[in-house]
Image (cartoon, rainbow, N blue to C red; front, side):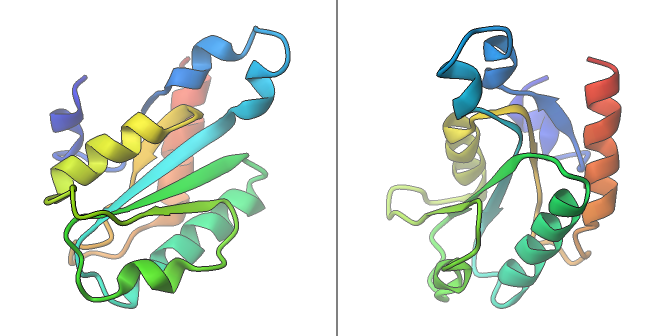
Length: 143
C-alpha cells in the first residue's frame, strides 16, 4: 500500500518503521511507540485541537502508547499554536510543506510507531477516535 492509497479510505493503519525494532534490545525498543497518528492540516481552526484531544483521550483510555505528529501544510490561521502543551504531540510548521499530501509524507517519515495511521481534521466529517482505535486493534491482531 502506498501513501496515496491512504487518502481514499480512512481510517487506515499500516505497519510502521518500529515494527522491525521490537525484538531488538534496548535502546531501540524503548524509543518506539505502538502507534503514530499523523495529522496533516491546513487551516482547520479550533477543530484541530478538539480532534487531537479526542484522539489522545481515546488512546490513553485504551492504554496504547502513541505519539501524534501534527504537520501544517501552509496553514496560516495559527492552528499549530493551539496544540501547545498537549502531551505526546509534536507539531511541525514549516514553509517548505505546501500541501496536505506533503504534510502526510513528512509525518510518515517522522513516525516512530510500530503502526502508523492518519486523521484528516480538515474534512467535513468529525474524526471518530474510537473507530481509529478499533482499526488499530484489528491491524495489530492480524499482524
